[in-house]
Image 1: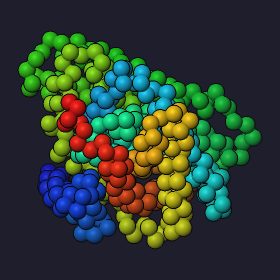
Image 2 (image 1 turned 60 degrees about the horizontal axis):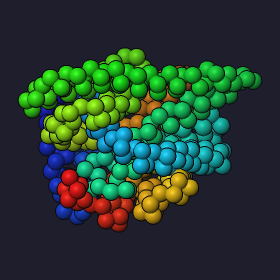
Image 3 (image 1 turned 90 degrees about the horizontal axis):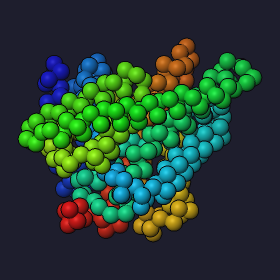
Length: 396
């Protein structure tokens, strides 16, 4: 099977299974993941590992579009209303998941360096599935607005946690006695602020160009090319492509008079790209690994879920968020595929010659089989219970 056939088959199967699971009130994104599992190595093996590596650009594009769309939800007027609340929730959901998973791994007699790295990876929340479910349900309200903002800044917090954890792990492995905190903290700060600065710079140029054009097709060409260019530049400079494109979206939604058209044209082409992204992500997962990771995988999953839900609820409580946010915010933060797998790959590169990278990738590829099925279901549960489904149509 050539690459074009594989991508086409992925989209068709994802669409079909997404429609089927929708009939049972299950989010389409869960159907896309199931389609990937069926097409991948877990079942029929139609999508090989080599194929998945060749089409990785589709995943990069999908994440760039998702990040841009998230930025489009972050109007300054809205951030003024929920800013402090969002930072409190994002900080506590990430740090609580990190602490609980780290402690749980230590109780399972795992080495400190592995416990720290698994804890750091656990702090990550992938925005894609959450955003997809919110869009599918046309959700609007305090919970939906807060969820989008929390997953937007979660990436930055996760980077900080990972940088500190990985630096400590390297010291432990090298048996060095001192940790140089300046070098530990400088890398994530450079990555975060570099990403924002690049997004602001490109956003300013894009906003100016958008002021000079009006035809829908022209807007589509310019917006899409800038999103792809921004992701490419972020990767080249080793910045966060998610943060950079999110900043680009923030610039457009707050400064461009053409903002409505800019985001609507992206929405009009994003469905097949998102479908392919989740199917291809699902194809990477291997159900057989669930047995291999055993107790470690189950404890990791349970500790992360508890940490996310408890930490988010605590952050919402101390920041005096609305009752619906306190009660349900954590249920929208369970999906992990994408960001966490990316971190696992980084770990395998940063710790060559050790078994750390392979162990963490194994744990993640196994446990995301669970989180990517229950994550969208939990997000749907939270939105339906909050009563915010369908509100986007009535308030727009």
